[in-house]
Image (cartoon, rainbow, N blue to C red; front, side, top):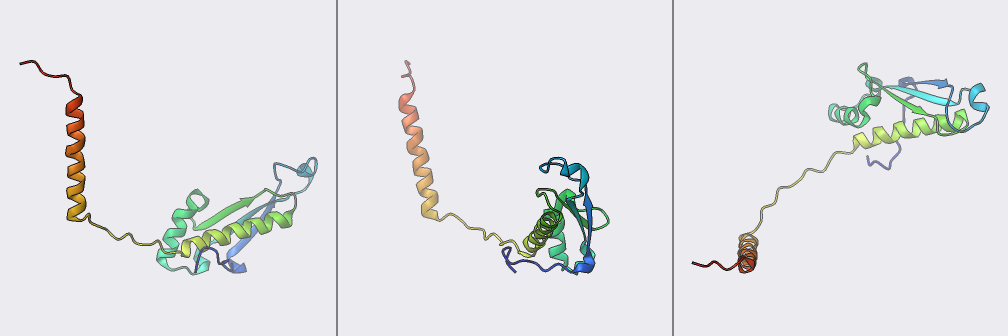
Length: 137
């Protein structure tokens, strides 16, 4: 699964709550609960242990000690738009956790590359030596 594929969220793992929002909306902000707080029980997703660990690190402070991820969306003026935004962000986070990091392969400099580096170092030292004040002995 790549990070671009949308992850399908099971409904039984989700819980939504709508709160009074801040931001754009004028007087509407004071009257209507448009912000969406989405809670997802990670244990109900049935993730593999390495995926769970990656999700835990990606979620950071958004994950509670009880294993719930809390995402609050309040960018839009409507409940529906904020609800979609929260679900999309959660799905993206879970999809990112499914991507296994590429293991780094250690490389070693060739003997020729090492020799070239030493030669350049000697050459640079000679240039600096030539800059120095002449010693009077």
